[in-house]
Length: 308
Image 1 (cartoon, helix red, strand yellow):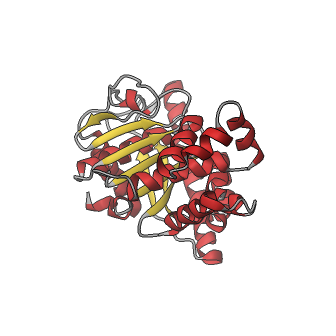
Image 2 (cartoon, rainbow, N blue to C red):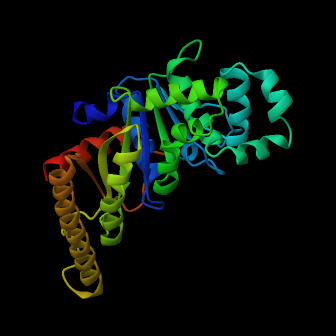
Image 3 (cartoon, rainbow, N blue to C red):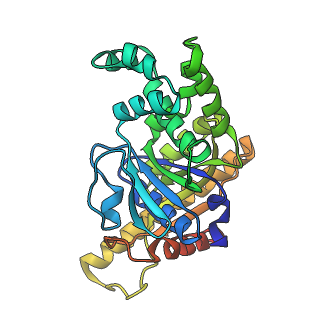
């Protein structure tokens, strides 16, 4: 898997992008590729409904329970309030603080009064899982992160909490989490987009903000659902409405990709932002559960897009 080694070299990959563009599929296949490279990998989400486990043919499980879905690969869905409790009690070692201050209905009240506190605990959980957990630890973690706007707020959480002057173990944890996110050898962000002009315009506007405000490094841009060249792999209609539709889709995608290329060149000249761009062809219907080798094969093909 040397073709995506810059991504797999990190302990923590944070995947984000606009909703509805295949972000979860990208995160899941990255996890599968990491596991195939021989690293014990954990895929993490924080969602009302499990999305990762079913992609591997595994049933939904109670929140916070890891489910093994393949060799070297497990998934977990973290529920925010339970993660808050577990992190304060187990990882910060502050059971009395939780039981006397944060317990019962006061938990939600307290979380709401300190912006970003629940998000800090989510980031802290990822940090602890990789760096501090007792016993065997996963070698890599892929977080199927929130949509871009919420994700940017997540990345600024440590600073937001520190600005409240809360002090104590929470302030110490904020500093540790921020330091881990800022470690460019350990942590990185993968941003997912699609070849649509509106999406591309939003990407070009958002990426500089992410680079400016996030302590974690932006590693790569992934363009999902790139139309295959007309006539490949099984041929396409040469006449009629279907042919016109395919030609329109192909032209729109090409225009969007050209807009992206110009925009990235401008950002490179203006701010030095130089991103590798991986391309994932439009797969139509993604097979579920993922076959063995699906993720590695997909990323091997995506890496070829770097040269196009």
